[in-house]
Length: 217
Image (tube, rainbow, N blue to C red; front, side, top):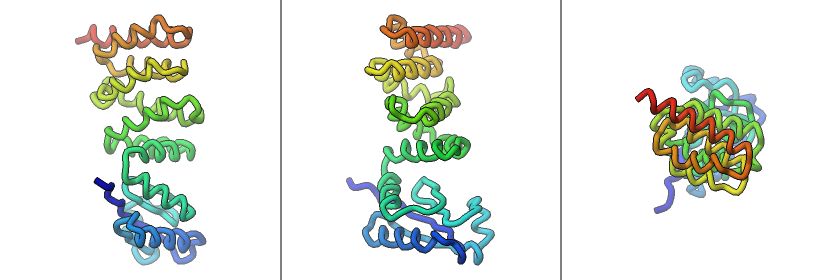
């Protein structure tokens, strides 16, 4: 079944240097059925509506679940429209926000739907991801310590403990420890004998966290 194209909401201002090009790019995507519906709001005419969405500058775009600001080329808009229709785009959007230093916005986006945590594991599994992105993603996952949302990721985290890169195995062990689930223990125990010292140390810390958590029950 083909993905449903996302709808778009665009805020513009009369003197905006980039609004016309973004509007044109989005209009082309509507014609190509990559966007379902395009709503355009002039901030000067409807300041209250802009305030309702927290718009501070134009162009401001809500494309599916994503909020994008500033200039974007037609190719970038097409890419975001495609990403807005599937789970894969969530990881790209979080990476985009973290590169901009917008951690709070990323956290709010995840908190609005904790199912969005799962796509973040693709970043955890990528040792080549930028350091600020890896740290940000780990912080987002850590903010859900001992929650059902993080426990639901246990199968994927267990698989990552067998990753070829020790940094990925270490992060997976750390996150398994934060699930608070007794079911995580067998996977962490295996990491206690990992070939890499860092993984063994983090596995030990994770095991202690799990034992402490389950002792309270």
